[in-house]
Length: 190
Image (cartoon, rainbow, N blue to C red; front, side, top):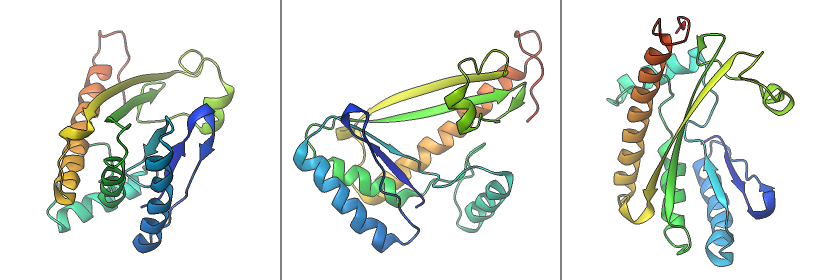
């Protein structure tokens, strides 16, 4: 599991950066979530379940891992790391003020090149990414009540895997939609 970022109230960032040693990561998550459950502060918790940045090389490695482990291969995404997500949800169940998990998918292109994201610097410094910079974005957000998610660790892992396959299908639909000639867009290169 690569990283998890926790944004507290009043815009304060608390980022427990995790390494890929599950025993150490689990202890850090236990410590962080003790505060979430006890203090009941309104907050957002952002979990990047792919645990690393997408690159073509990493995608090929993820596809090979999926084949070796008889897992479905998500389109346009790396296979999710489920342990951190499962641990997060199981801890959040103890926090009665936490009611839902939100699943956010962002589709983007740059000058009709699919899946090319702006740099962090461009995101922070350019007020018109979709203008002269040529970026196009679409954000899809789904809300899942926490009490409707599977109870077991295995069930949660499977639930996340299913979301990832759906995300990949959604991204493929968006890529195809944006690439149609006559839809107000030029052809998009995959």
